[in-house]
Image (cartoon, rainbow, N blue to C red; front, side):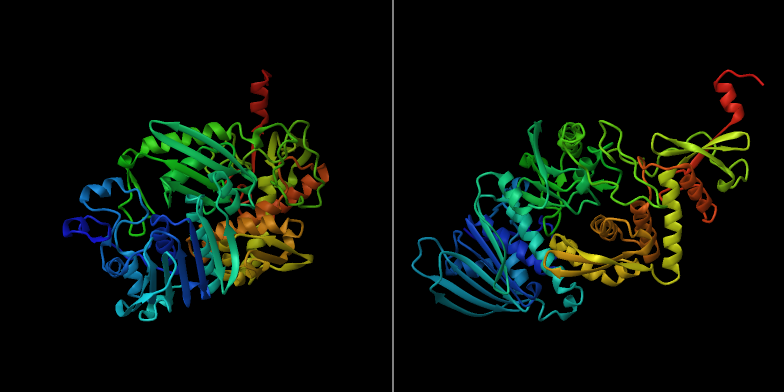
Length: 573
């Protein structure tokens, strides 16, 4: 039964604006449908949801009086007393959504209670009820929103492009579909179906429906009354930032840095710092341990014992990650790491027997500097003056200098050279590009595709020519001339990671993007390097600034003086 909450309960509710964009409208309406026991939810929209957004369900519906009451603020059937806020088991509970949406749109509410002979139609404009009448409608509820923000045009200025708003709206629906595998979901844009998820019995089946592009692997664990179930992809699909990781707590999609951080930390030694796996993680937490009354849109939570929650999550994911498919011997799982062709005309060496190329995570950016001195810190010796002796461990160039031995990390050195060249080009206007002989089409989730459209000009300045050629398809036509050997898809995905996670100034963003591009274009550990190529790389180092560190801060080289070698080997002068 819908009722208006008493004042002392209203005072305890986290207040705030629940309508930011069409996606937030869709979220509230779909959540209402799920709370009403729907077995089928349909979402139709036009113009990114601004012109029209319609959510229909076959839930319990409402009679005429309940429908009117639902349009009043803080009228809800989900809670009755202040104590109910401590054990909320539904999506909604504040009674704010419908009146908030109605106040900034033209709304038509159609509903018919189960078993009722007829339904009700209510038209509202800007929060004002224009008409109420009987209606012959199916059991359930249909809410049609038109001209969102028509009476608050300033809000329209804060919306993104139609493609971006569409992508955000679809993302919300997909995330909610993950919470209820036993409910059928469909989404239509301008009458054309975008996706349809049939009813399934297992959540893993729904995860496969929603995240069909990813090769996911499942796990489960529990302790202290908490349960963790997850479906994660391998390191090859990892991203900078948690944008590809969906977290659900007690069936509610949430944004929680501590939970995402625990999952990333559980991949220590598998993923480099700052990178997160893609996939879905479900957590079941006793209601008494979690407070959902924190954020107006219920995206954030507060745990009574956060260390216990993150600890169970970390131990579960960590234990599984170390026996996951990608940790098996070579041949059982192929990682697409190190996709760039080696720079400087070097040939790629075959991987040593029994090893998977590229599985070793690079050292963290804040790794301690070796206690051996960096080249040049004691004597101003040019890299090009060193005599290249050879390569060891497929990664390090061994050189001889005046009265010392010098070890050079070939990837760090090549990365610094490439970065400086790219940065010089960026600062002179834009990075020169090279047309691909055959443009590469890339399937991409709508949110990432929208990111390409929003940043098409910026990507072009980085030498990447890419455009959106479908709702979930991006075509790469040009890559930076210096990076002509890279895999366009891996390059674009890496740059999008930086764009998605960066909130800094353009200059800072450029440094991050260019360093990522340089990393993908540079020779890596495991690439063969002969003496001639090694010397060419050292000569190139002498032409750039900050040659002693890669763009991420790792040292390029260190020296071992002859006196130290003699001391270690027991020789006396």
